[in-house]
Image 1 (tube, one colour):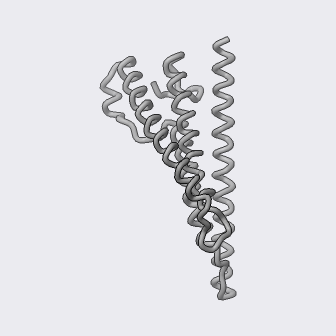
Image 2 (image 1 turned 180 degrees about the horizontal axis):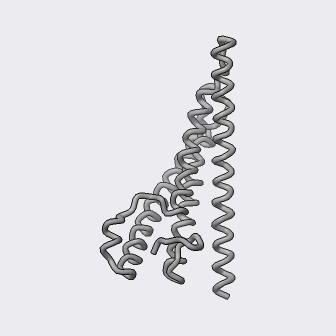
Image 3 (image 1 turned 90 degrees about the vertical axis):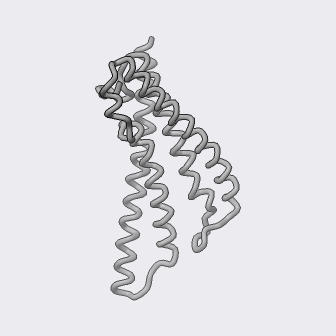
Length: 172
């Protein structure tokens, strides 16, 4: 039964990560095409798309915030590696868990504050685009929520079978 639950959790985490990766890929592709179009229009036609700079700025915000949960999933965030190496397996597991719990609390506070920001900004429109600013900022609670999911699942796997969220991972 536990193996089935573990598999469902891993598949769910990988599906969420896949959605994030596809959003990153799509975002980056649109940014690339829009930048090339802007370069072409400015260089050869002497004109540009008025809203492109603003859209590129907002897409950059999405790119940064959507990349954060992926870094959490892969365990690529800054850690106390030197301190972790000094400890034995149990102490290392406890230290990593404490750090993850602190990160969960911080991400929850970010999520809570971002939800307030998104709600307030839904009435404010972008300067050149007919887009509510809340749409731009909704990536913050999405990112924080996905990060919390990955950290909670990582804690679960760390304490139930001493492995990381990813199969074959090397984190304690």
